[in-house]
Amino acid sequence: MNMGHGRRMAKENMPVQEDIPMFRLLHLDASARPGRSDERPHGSHTRRLSARFVSRWRALRPGDPVVYRDIGLAPPAPVTGDWIHAAFTPAERREPWMREVLAQSDRLVDELLEADLIVAGVPMYNFGVPSGFKAWIDNIVRVGRTFGFDRTRAGDPYWPLLADMGKQLVVLGSRGDHGYAPGGRIEAMNHVEPSIRTAFGYIGITRMHAVAAEYDEFGGERLTRSLADAEASVDRLVDRLAVAVATDSIAA
Image (tube, rainbow, N blue to C red):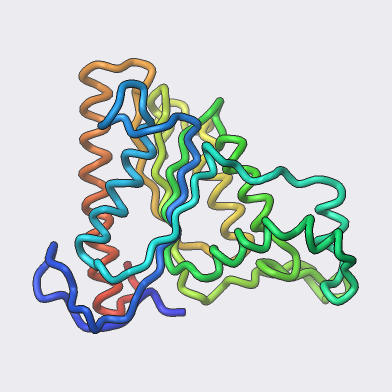
């Protein structure tokens, strides 16, 4: 699957022509906070950033379908012993109860497989990802569907099944403290983007872009400035990726 198809956009920040093939987005929100911080008090910064990304993308490419899933307010069921038993049973040998246990996971994997770009709003909770997002990852990292496993295989018995499909991931985050970015004062305490990069890389999605706002627990001018910087970064990222899609570029 290529990053995109079609002709170059006539002008940057203008909608592309309708004959350009569709590019499919999967929009995820993982925040436990309902609403967006630009619309309600105590709303979510990550919902704000992910909505901005998708809105700007739609303005540039109105024909692209977007599938939305709120895994913050409606998280997937966590993995259980029965889930593991079912997932590692070959599909042709699964009993009806096994197929039922895996039904939600199958839907989530199908959504991932159909997407060209995954846009995920993921706040930092206690240095890591929210539990709903971790449950989503546990449901989509599936043997036989997103990664392969063969104990008799020479070398590494595991391999990614989504490699070379051209899929990309955008992670839009928020943090209460500051200094979690690469080179920052507490970079080592950031287990959000690194853990996401590891999980997605394991199944073959290695092209990841990340933007995050900080200072949520401080508020005031520092938070306002950080959010403004994050929104500007989101806008630039959308424009760059949309142009890359329209020009069939793989160097976005």
